Length: 229
Image (cartoon, rainbow, N blue to C red; front, side, top):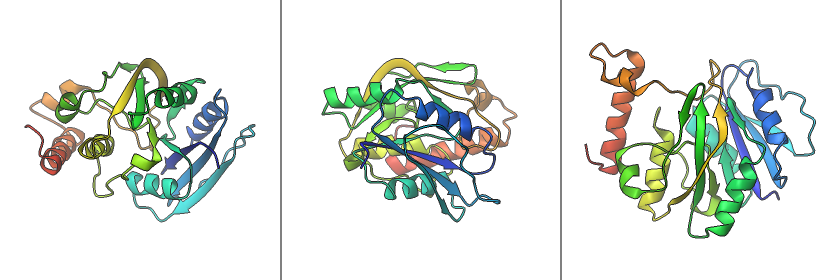
């Protein structure tokens, strides 16, 4: 049994998958396994050839969306820690080592998260703060989580799945530890599961489809967790 299971959900384009898996294969921390979850792709996902002794396998489910795919991947592993890594994420070589060290040296923390880049945009994130978390999403899905404290993703949410996860864990008295270094980047390949728009877009009077969907999704999170509006 590996100490860390890396779960990579994929639906649609798989052009970024070789880059993602190569970055995992180059980790300085080696006690890991990788599970790629094919979320009902047609044709089925074919694993790219990656030279690594790290076990990489692909499992398949009928198309059900990213939250269900991540939960399915977690259920098909048996590690102490979980890392959910979309196919357009590229990890720095020391990412897993740094996050594992943070959890090992902070046993009170349930997950470790970092700064990151989304394309050209830099997201510094913030030190863990329950009040800030209740007011805004600032922790990315790609964080190292203690499996014992992982409640699962809500399959009913089309957006803000990561924010919902951290809020659910907060309600269960589980918090995180912040690493103020940039340990991964999101390449944002078309067809993958990562999304981001500049914040000013959501304030425009002629908001597009993505912005309206964002606003509706935020309302659902606010109502579910009884957050300040």
